[in-house]
Image 1 (spheres, rainbow, N blue to C red):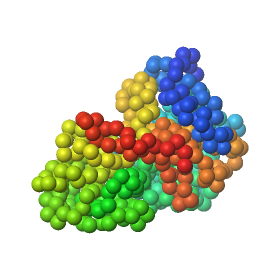
Image 2 (image 1 turned 90 degrees about the vertical axis):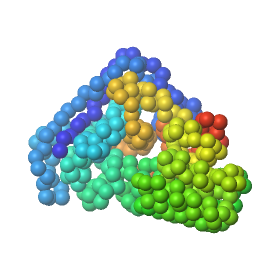
Image 3 (image 1 turned 60 degrees about the horizontal axis):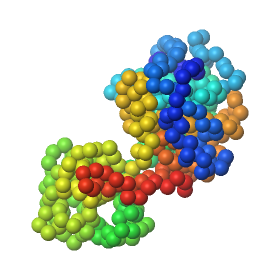
Length: 409
């Protein structure tokens, strides 16, 4: 396993950018709700090469609490030790690198020197990465990326009293000591359903793909109906990876009786199913989508998807973030990279009242609103981040926000 240390980086030229773009949002919050105190300007468009320190370790150790290695990074009495647990190799290695780059970027942009963030590679074993991070003295874990790695990380972190804030969006993996800050699909469905109910939808149907994502979105739809009213008329299921969504749409239309259809899948399925749903006098049927539709231009070129609505985190600040990222690292970030950036903003906010060397004050997370590139969010008692989402509509060859994300809760 490789340990990669993100150090402070000194630079001279600075211009406005992503963090500067968050200033106006911060002004509307009091000190308790600020995501970060003090707004620092971004670096110029030069590419920044982070100063790194690499430490090689031997094979995985079976003991649950190994001693720090002889090559462990030195203690730092002036900075909080934070571990970033992400894959740096394997099929998700590029995503992990994008998250790591975003954390570096956040440290640069905020010009703060009270955090030391060390990246631990989970691709060779998340449990060993967590044990090493804890043995090295880290008091907070940012990660892991994958829900499948959470049990191994938790097994190492819980006995040590170390909190982990995962980038996963699998709500079943959340607990008191492993929180989730990923974009939760169920929240987007519930936001869309509420908007639809408030704007005339009464009788609902759904096209639901086989698998975990379909089941989660369908369950969210049922919860929304219980909360906001409305009737569920019909549900048709289908297998992904072929054209069975078209057959499912034909079966759904044959039954009729609904005014709104949720296509609980990505844009490809929506583009295939929409013409079948809206034919033979059913052109006025309202279509609902998922957060998987976010950023997908193909939807705007499909006439049958015209008028469809879906919800997602706001992209208002993402383009500036992406441009700044590309100027530094020479490539485009994964959309999920904003979670790495916002995790640093969250940590810096908490560090205002967190003494170096003490355990992370997890209880103080609750009840606070944080602001990041993806907008406002807060942690619920179940350990899942609730996000402020906007409602979007596909119309006139573009996608527009028809209901903005709230700036607070």
